[in-house]
Image (tube, rainbow, N blue to C red; front, side):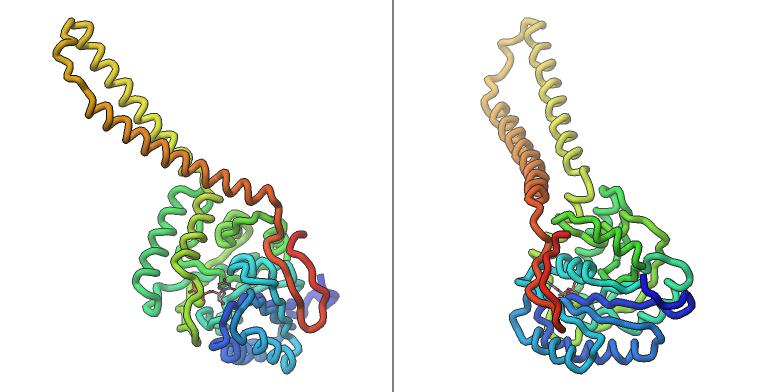
Length: 326
Ligand code: UDP
Ligand code: MG
């Protein structure tokens, strides 16, 4: 903790992952400054460059030269949004940490309100995106369906329309940093932790430039982490389907037996096609079931390797590089 007196406002770290945001970074920083310069807290701003291939890193370094509150954490390659966030959380030291996107979609104007709620005694302030007219219909629809699904089958409740724009107090950040799973869905992990949480709705702003870095594939991958690392329901579903098919087979056996017992076996049609049908269906179900088991095994495989979640190439200004392993 800091050595400031209990009455002085808490120190705040802003954790902002950026990946190829050359078109937004400078303007975002201006917007951010305009807000935090008005606040009494001591801020430090951690930009995590997630292996950008454009000018983002240079722009961030230039910002760090003129704004001494800024630190730039350069990852060794693109590790993905959730890993970049983790890198920033691990490096943070403030009594309060706020994570947000560096593309302007998370309005810095919300920060004072978030700090007020922290001051009022909440440990975590989640923000909830009001339905955005800016977002493409497809993204809104998939996001809506996704939260419906994950809240039905998962055992933690995850806020629909939640993004990785949230405030966390030191103790909760430390707890989150202690969770080192490789497959990360931070929204779910934060929901899992509990603590005193409050929800702050906001209207998202438009991207300042560039375009979304979440491709359909990345969205799917994040969704899969959410489903398969938070829920065993897919396994239960496959077991249930297997059970239903076993019951069907049993019913058929009884049916066929009844012909034999009645001495009418001659009237049984030579059942090649029906046999084939059952074989195919059962084969299909087996494949699906195996696939689902395979996904869990894959996740276990990744976790047992215990690789670091990210690697840091450099921290500027001047800090020795270190791993995301501990
Ligand atoms: N981002 C990142 N690494 C990635 C993809 C995205 O650090 O591999 C950053 C990105 O620069 C932005 C934030 O994560 O600050 C959210 O990404 P984006 O805006 O592309 O996602 P969307 O808001 O469209 O869901
Ligand atoms: Mg965005």
